[in-house]
Image (cartoon, rainbow, N blue to C red):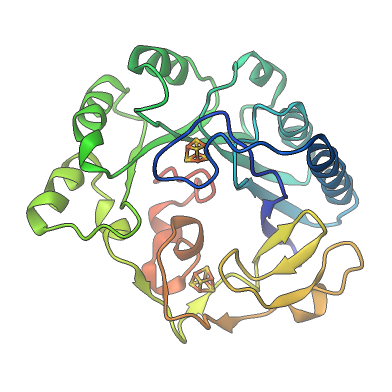
Length: 276
Ligand code: SF4
Ligand code: SF4
């Protein structure tokens, strides 16, 4: 093995925001849960240091990670590690950004989501345009957010990719979809779930999902276990595998589904969702 992509999701499930479309809004983790999440993340970063191959890591917490010091520290630490090609995180960017000054901007990247009901527009725009690290910015395709998304597209630098995620459960008419497609020329990839049954997907081969206990699965959406990261049992089970699910409707999954061709579309920025 020369390189492995890891989608890491620990137990952290709390968030400082309260988005109507999310079950984690304003959830609290107990002090014990936070301590366990911190210990698990430290164990994971220590493991990455011992590997003899390259790694790319995307943190996909249930809640918001960057309000916790241990995620910021892990991102900075990993960004300087020679065997880390990319370290990225999905974030609402609510936290201050000065900590990023300590990171290697060639390696660290952010997948930023703008939540219009949770943060003042000008505040968000100032923060995101002040970023000195690679980032994409996105909005959930709720019709109530259309004007905010258009405004954001107009105000962001042309080189900053603004993605639109189809809202879960929403069926878009062609007319509605065209409005979002104007903002995000790649919206058609998100509009419908991708038929994936029996199709080649890189997860389970060159991409894996890892939880706080080190349990390795092919992706966040297929529950069967490949092994454990810390006892190495997953290694022998890596290899090309077809998707066992009917469809895949989340970007962090279907970007790895080979027939989508998205590794070409996002070449160089697969984890942080930045097109070539
Ligand atoms: S910011 Fe993200 S995790 Fe937090 S409530 Fe909104 S959607 Fe959920
Ligand atoms: S296509 Fe999606 S659900 Fe299927 S294995 Fe790949 S990431 Fe998992």
